[in-house]
Amino acid sequence: MTAAYANPVLETPPKISVSITEACPHACAHCYSDCSAAPKPRELSIPAWREVLAKLADDGFIQVYFEGGEPFAKPGFLDLLEAVAPRMMTLVRTRGAGLDAAVADRLAAIRVGRVLVDLMGDDAASHDATAGAPGAFDSACTAIEECARRGIPVDALVVLTRRTAPRLNAILRLAHRLGAERVGILRLYPLGRAKRIWEEIALPLEAQMAAIASLDPPDGLGVMQSWHPRDQNCCWQAAALDAAGDIIGCQYLREYVNYGNILERSYLDAWRNDPLYRRIRSGNVEASCPDCSATQRSHGGCRSTAFAFHGRWEAPDPFDVTLNEGVDLAVLPDRLR
Amino acid sequence: MPFSPTDCVSAARGLRLRPVPEMGTCLAYDPARARLHTLNATSWLLLTLCDGRPRAAIAAEFNDALRSLPGPAPEQGAFSRGLEQLAALGLVTTAANPHASMQTRKDTPP
Ligand code: SF4
Image (cartoon, rainbow over all chains, first blue to last red; front, side):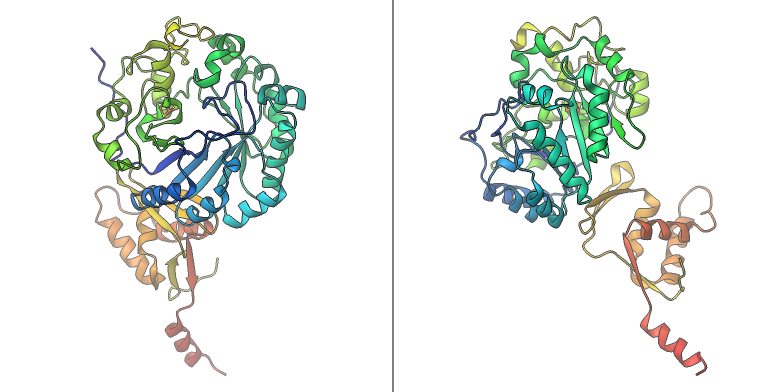
């Protein structure tokens, strides 16, 4: 029997995340998409994405968050961005590959809404070791600087792992120096290549909480993080497409759900009628942290990590200290191996 | 910010509004500034009234609408403050009313 919790309900979602490609010149050790240098065969073309995004705008979407893979590695991506930006707020997550002064000029002219750049260390040795590509650190730093110099709002993103935890404050200082407005600290998800090196890079929850508690950002730098008491169940408003156009609700659900393909089904049809999509959004979970519910107005924490570690959609999120129930986050469940 | 009650106020060009009635808010995307704002119900109402009419006409309709809602009467100055906030975000533009300025010229001594 589940408790009577409920998330806010949206008739239609206003924001969507699109994984535009699963190709990337980097080879990040924990890549959730298991990217390679060449695009995967099912990936949608730029003309197809143009049609899909125009239809999404017609259907009431007003913001699109592009990620990958590496969006700037997809030929024609900037033209797509230019076509979309007059109707939808655009955000782009990048490893920085290819985002040089000329591309930053174009982004400023297109009026991109925000650029988010992954940092995997505070120096070339640490960043490039995780990115699996020499020069990756320089590209990431250049991307942040060139965007900031042109007044494009830019954030840095850091995935919290054994590798980044000891360097978090140095990464915050670096991001601030380069001109980032904020740094988002993200949890590590057991997806893609991260599963293969989970025991090597995943931290136990106590160590994650200690790392978050030790954050000491420089004045003027915003920090975003979603650990207790800010563990949200954002499924209620989440919409996402993978690089093949499959409707997956959230990029972190990519290995667990598929509500059909956007070339065969409208997003709103999946949103309204897919029973699993409706169930995951509902917030009808087994347990809810009162502190997180009070700050986030949703219940149960992240559905992706809850499902990954428990195999049930209504399970408690083990990344929340009040809902962890003894789960060791540094050990990958056998089901996911 | 100096203003005249006869000034005409319009929503900024290119603005796209996306109501989220379930949350009592409206998202306003301003492509010229690449910003997405979340407006509360009062700002949302005010912005939709800014259709190029004179400020005084918008104020009258805005105050009527607020008075028709259940709950306490609208606060003094709610209209001016709300309009100032929308202007600060770049969501509305103000232009002199051409008819009003002709009148003013006639009344002004040489
Ligand atoms: S799976 Fe987690 S991150 Fe994704 S939308 Fe749901 S709660 Fe948010």
